[in-house]
Image (cartoon, rainbow, N blue to C red; front, side, top):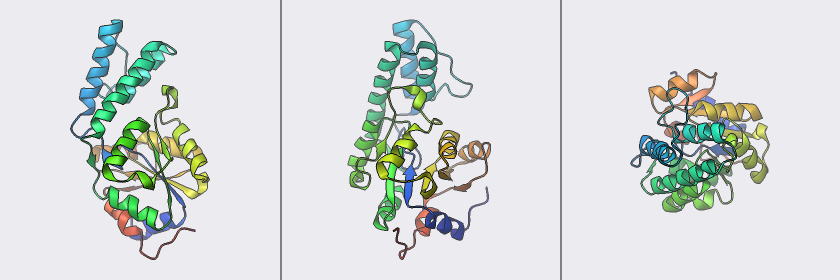
Length: 238
């Protein structure tokens, strides 16, 4: 992957007033210790034990808790199973938030973006409760306030549906044209693209890069430090 020039990133920031951050990836590694495969296995076991059912998930997504939730909703839409499964996933994400690892330079980037005047919001498929638990732990809550937009009860609103981005634009009083999303998945990119929100890919490893490159042309960084360096001391967002 060719890294963007510093001028590219400075120009990108100069064009926006609001930054929307995906949570698991750009802000922290949520499942650093309480891993996503372990959570996914618990969700699958829970379904099997109570409903003697196995929900089909897309190939390669068997260890993705959100894919399991979506697959359960596809098969059992409107049932108590989906509601209970979402509650279980929220509990597991809250547990993971206690041991989540901050993404390198993320905390500094959040503080610097806020200091120069950017509006900030979280737009994530994770539970807003888990996000707030983590932000409280890291002393970041005040930088986002009410602008934490996580998973809704209806799994059909998970990204790539742009619902959480749309809510963030509304609460921050921002337009799509003046906003930027930082995400690390094709679903993030597709949600931003649907609303016309600028997108910066965070590709911390080769697998992330390949998945992002498969969905479209975009600026991508391998480290948030690159973006941190682009927030120049003299920058002020009006």
